[in-house]
Image (cartoon, rainbow, N blue to C red; front, side):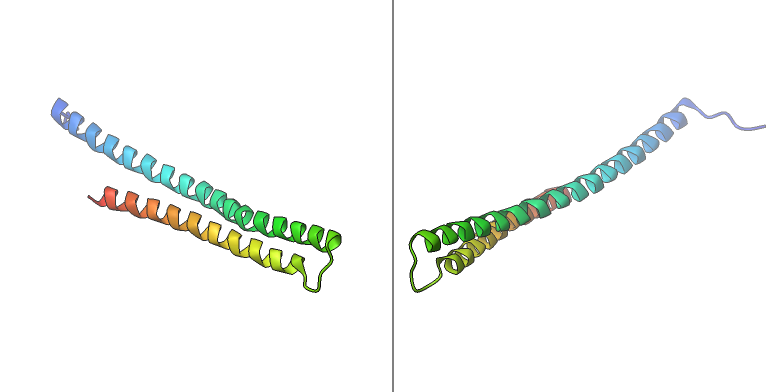
Amino acid sequence: MAKKRTTEQDSAFHQQLNAKVARKLKAQGKVNKTVWSGLGMMGLVGWSVAMPTLLGAALGIWIDKNYPSSHSWTLALLMLGLTLGCMNAWRWVDKEAETIRKQHENHDE
């Protein structure tokens, strides 16, 4: 014949079970958030580099077409746009890395 559990044992068991479920749900939420935020960040970084590059090239083409000169404004402004886009993307990624680092420090304390 099996022993009957007391109310205290049931309560302790439920607390342990609830704690495990809460940890598991929290871990699953972080995985989903990380995957989606990672994909979103890739898109953001791509656009933050591509847009200034394309705008620089478009402006350079327009200047070269309307105001011909001995050097290529298209190439110069394309490189300027690419440089600005890379600097913008670097700033954004660095900011996100700092936020993640702070969250980990706060979680460890």
